[in-house]
Image (cartoon, rainbow over all chains, first blue to last red; front, side, top):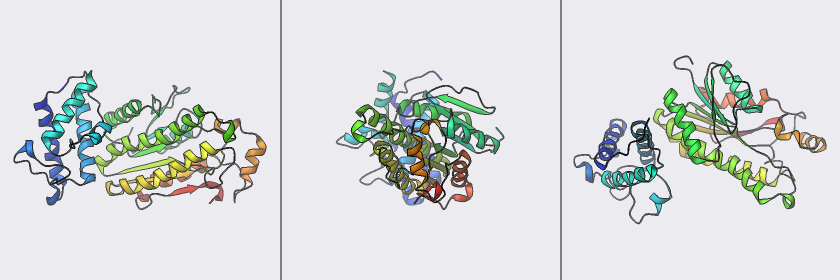
Length: 107
Length: 235
């Protein structure tokens, strides 16, 4: 597959879609509230995902990025854990982080 | 590959135990993928070989990705790739220690991590790592190798707990010396000394190793995880 750098709205759409897939199999208290997708809480304070839920979601996103855009990124890398504010807080923060990584991966 | 056949990925599959395991699981009807730094000399029917260095994160990702794209899943990962160093610690160069740790520990870690990402989608997976009797026997002259394999044992125990909720088991087999390239350069008296410490005093065979690996990857072994089985009665 030729690599195409996804723009931010594409990444948000992809993350929301995978959150919806997560909700289909998650217990009610672990389901992500997607009524306001950009502000949907994922992990950390007020987040609904436990560490296993986060791992599963990140793995699904990595595979979708590779399959749909030909971009290989590792979401849980040193950069993610060294940031003052975790990129895994919300759909919006995660999408922005992924968008930045995709740009770096392409560079 | 027959539809529904288990998909098995074996590292270090070009020769020795890895190649034997590839043949063994092909015979059992698995779809078998393997990797090593060099190409396969005599290709196996139904087997797919990928050239990759297990210490290179991007190459490990590429291998796992290739298998996932071809089959949609990975049922079994056998982390066989490994290198040995037999020398007194004071005669062991830094580069050797680094290579041993990179291949045996980092390579195993990377493949576990990347394969588990695929396995967790199906909530099923079997991972078998390679330890060694060098760990419980605390073999002199194998400090770097034994330490690396002890790390693999600990990695196996911790990952078993991390991956347990995802339906993935992680176990390890600890072979005795087996007649492979790995021990060809080791003096005979040294090998004899190791064998003498075993309850069953003979060299191991590829079949001995395959038997334990086969047990660990069995779908019926879902309640067995975090274990290391040493061959030859070594404990």
